[in-house]
Amino acid sequence: MKIIAMSNQKGGVGKTTSAVNIAAYFSKMGHKTLLVDLDPQGNAGSGFGVSKYRVEKSIYHALIGEEVLDKIIRKTEYENLFIAPSNRDLIGAEIELMQAFSRETKLKKVLNNVQDYFDYCFIDCPPSLNLLTVNALTAAEEVLIPVQTEYYALEGISELVHTIDLVKKGLNPDLRILGIFLTMYDSRNNLSNQVVEEVKSYFKDKVFQSIIPRNVKLSESPSHGEPICVYDAKSRGAEAYSDLSTEIYERVSGIAKGNLRLVSG
Image: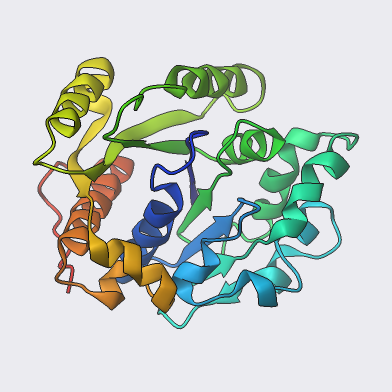
């Protein structure tokens, strides 16, 4: 199982939307895919119609050792797509884990128990650099960083990269940044275009070519409990996430660019 963390401590960058839709497209490719919601806001589940208000056992209970992960994981109504849901209980996990032995490796140990069941695991990290995020980075092999094409886009990214370096040195030497992708892009906005150039100049070949646009359908789909590939597979947002997911798969698999194409419909 390849474990990929989706992280940016700055809120409102499209992190959860991206985690939900990339996981959905990976499942459409035929990969058995698990999405772990490690954000106490618990919004990733709603993207698949799983209400955080109806979740009795969440990833929190796995982290504190109260329940095994395979009893928490839910199969979504979409083929090959599973979720380990979250809710506000997770807020207490950081406090409870603070005194725990090997507190940074709790998620890694939890995921080891389902290592043979899935091809890919995506972790939706909280919008902060806390113990939950450190757990995600310790468990993951790769990190995806969404960056919004807005003012102060790069604010805090250096801090995240520093945290990744610290985790790599002390806890997870194999961790690497898989790539950075841009979200909420508006081609009519000069600032958006400036940010694209700034991010590409700073991160160079780490930046994916596919850019996620501002799109009404992307905003609507969570309220319908559907990923964008189901809610409106022909929308600009769906096409962008299809292209991005293809790029991610090519990069993580070492496939030469352009040799794989995923139809969004």
